[in-house]
Image 1 (cartoon, rainbow, N blue to C red):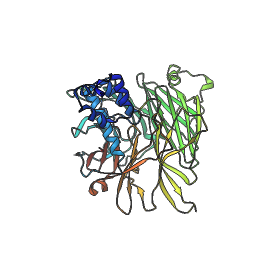
Image 2 (image 1 turned 120 degrees about the vertical axis):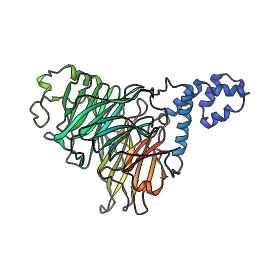
Image 3 (image 1 turned 135 degrees about the vertical axis):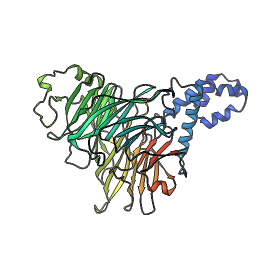
Image 4 (image 1 turned 60 degrees about the vertical axis):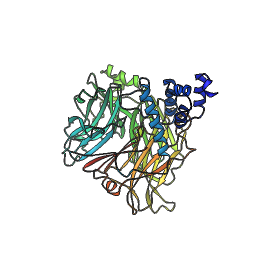
Length: 495
C-alpha cells in the first residue's frame, strides 16, 4: 500500500508530478498519509518547486528558511491558487477586497513584497507607508518635493531600505528640474511585532547635477545613474550610506541619446551591479563587480590617470571608471519598431535568474504609414555571451484606436509585478477601458523562454472603478492588484 512506503519514496512520488491539490487529496486518504502530508519536509520541497516557476507567496518579514509549518502551507497553497488563476482566460473582480479613502493626490506608488504594505508619495511632499490590511498609514515622512523615482531593497526580515530620487519642485507641479534634484536615502523600519511603531529614518541628501534615469541599492551602496550632458556618457553617483561618502563616476559608456528612443537603468545582485541600456534594436549591459565599487570609497584620492576633472559639466572630482565587462545583444524581431518610449526592469526572485524587462514601443506598419503602440516583454540573462539573440516572450500590438492610459503626470499605466513574473496594464479604446494581466512563460529551470507564449487574461472590474484609475501596482507573488484613483486605493486579489 502507498501508506506503507518510506517517506523518502513518498517525497519522490510527490515530486514526480503531483500538484498541491493532489497533496491535499492524499492527506484525506488515511492517518499515515495525513501525518506524512503534515511534515515540514514535504511542504518545504513543494515551496522549492514553486520557486522554480514563480515567486513564493510568503508574507512580509518571513523567509523560507525560518517560516513555520502553518505559514509554509499557507504560502504554498496561495501560490498554487494564484498560478491557476493567472492561467484562466478571464477573471471577474467585481468589487475590491479593500477600498480606502486617500488623504491627498498621489504622485508615486510602490508596492512592497508581501502585499501588505505600499509606499504612497503625495503632491504635498508626504511619503506614507500604507498598511493595506489596516487601511491606514503606519509611518510618515515629509520630503521637500515630489518623488521622481524610488528603488527599495530588503536588508533582513525586519528592516527594508528605500532609496528615493527626489525632485525639489513646487508641490503643485512636481515637474522634474535637473538643477533641483537630490538623492535622499530613507530607511524604513517596519517591526515584525505589531505593537512596535514603524518609522522612517532619513540620511543626509546629496545634490545631483545630471538627468537621473535609474537607481540601485547594493548593501550600503546607494547609486543613481544618468547622462552626463557634455560628454553623452553614463554617469553614476555612489553614496556609502554608513559613512556618507559620495563618489561621482564617469563610466565612459555612450548613451546614443541622438538615436531612437532608448532606456537606461541599473540592477544589483550580491556580486555585481549591471547598467542596462535598451533601444529598439537590442540591449547592452555593463558590469561592475561589487568589490570594485566598494574600493572606490576606500580610495578617495584616485590616481591622476583615473581622474577626469576636465569634464566640468558633470560634478567636480569625477572618477573615470569604465566597467569591467560589457555585452551587446540583438533583438530577433525589431524590423517595425521605430522607438522605445517606456521600459521597466525587475530583478529576479531567485538568485541567478534572468532580469524581467517590459517595454512599450512605437511601431509602424509594413507600408511605413500608420504608427501604433506595442507591448513587449523579454528576458535578459546577464550570464549569456555577448552577441546572443534576444527573443521576446511577449509582443502585442494595440489597435490604432487603442492606447495605454497615461495619467495626469504623464506616466503610462503599465507595470511589472514586484517580482517580474507578471505584468499588468490598462488600455483605453472605443470599447471602454480594458485591464489585462500577463503571465510570462518560464522554462523548467526558471528562465524565460521564447518557445512559449505569454498568457494574457482580462480582469473584469466595475466600469466606474477603471475609468478613474491613475496608477497600478502588482504584487505578483501574493496575486495582489492595487489600483489608485484620485480619492481611493482599491485592492483586488487574483485568486
